Structure formats: structure tokens, C-alpha cells
Image (cartoon, rainbow, N blue to C red; front, top):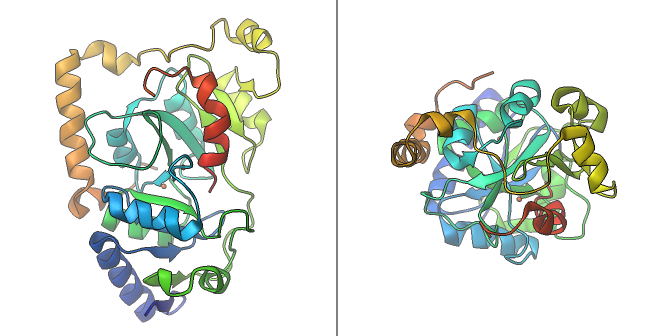
Length: 290
């Protein structure tokens, strides 16, 4: 039977966070508030837990869940390459309603669905969510609604949709009134807007200088950015490190991210490797909805 905690009460908040963290480690599902909508979350490193999340929402593996993190360091261990523009986006908009789609660290042992070697990552601007994420490590999280339904803005709405399929409901009151997160694809040389959301397109362009928007002529995007929409460029960090050393370093960081001790560090302020990013855009836009 599911349990619901009123997190406006300090005692229930502490008990709820402890219960939720324990459930996540066991592979059970939890519901938590974020700065946009309520999310249904699972341990990102337990394939059976991720599958339970997809099943609860009525989604198939073609619509993988994004991953929420409690710190920039945790995100860095999941991502193979932020590309030329990624760090600028994180510095400006994290924590907050920005999801970035990047090449996933190939050394990680996880199964989020048919991701084609990518991962969608976000660090939410919500203290309750961040506290849980720093305890559990990265979580696969999708909006708390059945596929096709309206995202839940309260724990009660989420409970009405999922009932006892969820082990713990963390009730943080009404979630933020922001639209869903903006999604930017960083797997190509030029960033591509996959979904408009809480962060306006103009703000993204102010930071990036160039942004390909679905529906725009790609040649126009190339003219602005001076680069074609192809395989993403290597970051400065990957150029400085020998390939083997870089892979080993990331594997070490990723292993630590799965341990609560690593995830508890303070934040630094959390949907085919060969396939061109343009081929993935349509699927990623719908798949990484949050």
C-alpha cells in the first residue's frame, strides 16, 4: 500500500524523504514535486525499476524517461560530451527548467529504453527534489501522468492517476506554475531546440548565439553558426585527456554517482551512437517529455 507524506510538516518531510530514498534503492516508484510538474521517479540504474516506470505511464521503450540529478557533478558522470555549448547552458540555466540531450557515457550499465546512445538530463530548481536526488543519485523521472493525460500539479492528482503503483508520494503542495522544461539537443555540432518550454527561445539564443529550431531551414542555421548539423564536436576536456584516461575517469565518477555518498555533495550552483542527431529529433521531442 502506498504512503503519502505532507512535506510541509518537518517531521513528515524527513520521514518521507527517508522512505522515498529507501524505496528508490529497492527499485520501487516514488512521486515527487519539481519546479515544473510532479514527477514519477525510479532508480536510473535498475532496469526493472525503469521498466516499471514506463509500464505505469503506459509508455513503451521508444519513449525513454529523462534523468534528474542533484548536482552538476552527477550529470557530468552521465554525459560523454557536452559539446561546445553545453557548459554555457548549464552555467546559465541550471538548476532550472532546461533538459539537455547529450551522448551518454558509454561505460554506464543502465537501460533507460531505446535512447540511441543519448541521455536527457535535468537538474530541477526545487529543494525537496534536490534533497532526494542527492541521497539517491540520478533518477529516471517522467511527468506524473498517464501517457496522453495532463501532468499532475499536485500529489493528489498523481495519486488519482497511479494509486498503489507508487510506493511513496511526497506532497510538496502545488508544483511550480512553469510550463514543462525546454529541451535542447546537444548531440550535434549546432544545438537544436527539440521542445519549446519554460525557457524562451530568445534566452537560449542570447547564451548560445546559434540555435536550430525545428521547422527552420537548416541552411539558415548553418549560416548563423558556421557549422553543419552532424556529429557533435569533441569538448576541450576530451582533447586534453588521452581517450583511455578519459574513459577510466568517467567510469570512476559514474560508479560514485550511484552511491548516496557521492550524490550528497552540494550542488554546483535534476526522457544509435551512429544515428545523426537530426534523425533522433522527432523521437526525442516526445520521448523526453517531463
